[in-house]
Length: 201
Image (cartoon, rainbow, N blue to C red):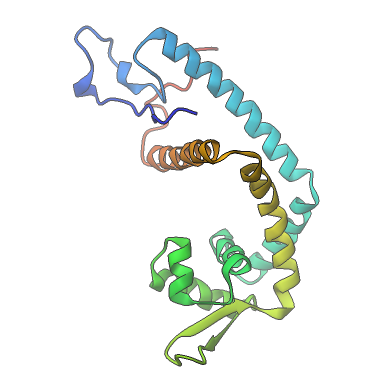
């Protein structure tokens, strides 16, 4: 997996004589050969993602996900609350500040999410016995089994994948995922019709 993101150049950086819109390629290189290679890899990636999504929908993990998401919705909560539950399976019980660091969010945001989850019956908060100013967050015992099954089923393929790769392969693999997330975040703020996905029809 390449370490370069292939980000598009701006219109002002287009070379002399380049046709209008030549800078709008999504992940494309600077010549036709690179474009063709990227298009071929894009097709492969779409096929792989299709297999991944079909596997998720056809597994017991999908049924458990539907059950958990249904309970979350019934409590007036949403998908943004689910990562908190997964983090508590991995790291809990844990103080709110530590949970926020694990999630890469601000303590205020995580505190709000935890409060909403507590009102929905998914987590408990109690004072830290060593420091009464801190609150320790844990999964509610009534929801623990369902949440743990959901999280462990979802995380198992990820762990198996990382275990199957060597250290250098894992580094490239994670770099690719980070790049994908960054490009998705960038694309969310751009005109979806302003770029070209593929040359092929």
